[in-house]
Image (cartoon, rainbow, N blue to C red; front, side):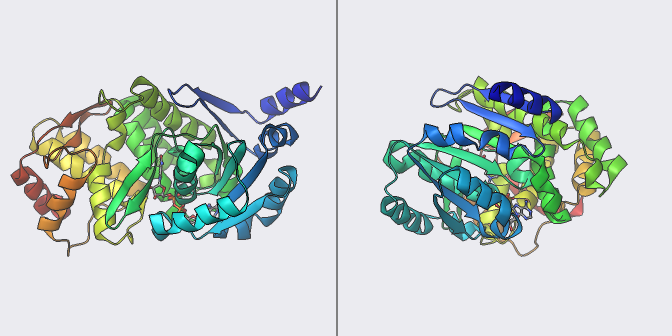
Length: 375
Ligand SMILES: NC(=O)c1ccc[n+]([C@@H]2O[C@H](COP(=O)([O-])OP(=O)(O)OC[C@H]3O[C@@H](n4cnc5c(N)ncnc54)[C@H](O)[C@@H]3O)[C@@H](O)[C@H]2O)c1
């Protein structure tokens, strides 16, 4: 009977599902409206010995009643409230969480629950991946960024100016993308999420790129009208297909997801993490497109199309002027995608066709930096 009720509810809520098979863990993602109660229920509570909830401090303020309900269903576990800033994605902060996990007698049969944006997801995922060599975690992403680019087999924290330098290949067992959370995001947070939606579209196909372009152009800031389920589902299909094709990140499919991310990591680190991830990714895609133009593989038309959509989404296309070029080059060499001091970058020929350009001449990087704010 309960199953029938659930089936009925799923139909009503136009639930979309993605099942991901990975070498280390399988992951189920659900996308829909008002769906948290469908999955955070008594049968889930019975599966685990106990839980610990890590929640974003702002989300706790806005959604206190919903979180109280989740707490009650899960047997009133301890809650750790986290400030959503990049300082929380560090080893120092993880020490504090470890202490709390040990105090709360978490065992291999326990489960972490993360409720918040990408920062809360990364911290929880990283700690879940190493606590007792890995225990389950569930993610309830509440930002557009954390839904449309939700964690699939990669979690990381940063060290000094090196963004996401320590991490694991690890996934939540269950991800619940409840569209309902998006209604309390401001325009800036919606724009942040669009950086990854645009990236997924650019590496996927012209058709999907045009769908995102027309959604933005036709609806402007009337976010209620956006077909969120479809946008998030498609973004996550693109991400999960690449992750499954190349689970150990060896054959370059997975690296397509890093389009724009190498320069983004550099910029975030140099800004002392004041620049938001979404802003940095937008600037990173422009940088990769300039390099793609300069090595002769991207047409002016594709470059302009990408620049236009970034602007349309309310994302930046101009970078801070005071950045030191020498430091930029040094940080490029230290990024995960580079080997032996050689600079590597994901480049784009056209929408749906990316590749890894290896050992890029420093002159090309310097030229791209000079040109950046002029085009
Ligand atoms: N591991 C991965 O696959 C992955 C993917 C994408 C991003 N990330 C990481 O995630 C971080 C960026 O994530 P983010 O952009 O979600 O930032 P974030 O976690 O800082 O959240 C952004 C802001 O939105 C607020 N917020 C969250 N949910 C809200 C809601 N429903 N209503 C109103 N306000 C809400 C938060 O309190 C915060 O102020 C970066 O560190 C990035 O590296 C990781």
